[in-house]
Length: 534
Image (tube, rainbow, N blue to C red):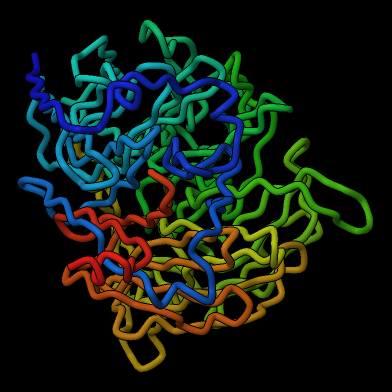
């Protein structure tokens, strides 16, 4: 059961009754921002250009919405024709994107109280519906106009510990969702539901069961509690009909002794047929991972020349410290190079893209120094690709860890199943950066330190106005020059940022918004004429 509260405001009936079409979902972000990544290709690049390099220093905070009971928000707001939808665990809020005023609020009543809540990373929209997932693993479709429940479908059994934190992805009349927690030994999967009815359509297992291809990449019965969470939203190529999704780490995290083999499809990108859920191809970044280096970082899809030929590429800066360029039609490895400055576990990649391991650099009973640490050389913070500069931008983490393993046994009921751990070595070398690489060569172009950030922080956004936006853990929201990384503007939100920025246009004005702590901040250009009128 659930409750819905709606309050009509001066937003306009046309906005509240707007329909999101398949055609709109195929477009790059412009006035609207329709899903977590802005577009199917996850470039996170907006065509809006009212805010530019020349005027970005005139940005001001236009409004702030305090999410009741919120804290540590990780959602990316979506905007549909002037209406913004934001989420926190088990709740969704519809706001007037011009003023931040509440239109309606929906709160899901849990079927089973999980042992912890959160995070929730956002919603998706299609036709007259808005979709989001819950901590007790339901997918819920609401009427976008008033927040009334249209249907809800169970994704997984929450009593086993499952949670669905990723924002849904809507494509071709289907809603795709993922699950966590792989670190508890729960096997991950992708699931698709009918966008109109909520009927389950297909199910793809991150961990192959007996009789399925690559089941033999797991020793004995280690596949039964093997991880492979699907905790970040994927990408989609409508021409190929392929869905691309990153798969998390194997379990237990730090001790691979009992799970000999490559442990597919953990630490991989999988390309799945959107109609059937059947695997087309996979590429594994870190075979037999023992450092919790999920392959879940966002896959960016770019059509660009490679070796003199136009190719459909998929690129990813991976948590293991290497940058990869793949052919997204076939999964062929095209190029890879180290981007992490501190990396000691591998000397490079083979022609097939497998890491060349350094013996002995892995967790031990007494501990070993491993670079990067288990936090990774990057993480879930969103990258962005700017077609104007032809560079990929992402958040880079430089630091090592002291990694140990033990002989912990699996325990059902939501317990962490790590069999070891990693202590971050916080010395003078530990730094957080925004880093720019050439798209196809992976060559570093510039590297801008995030001052004061201890770890992680928020992701990135690029715009046709020639600005990169970056949210930092210490609460600074920053604009950067995409050619040089030079800071151009900043605003202190006063709370830690652990979310990704987005941009939209309403009533002829471009806004940039980001979740920070318990609040949603929206920024736009200063209007001096308003001051003159006063």
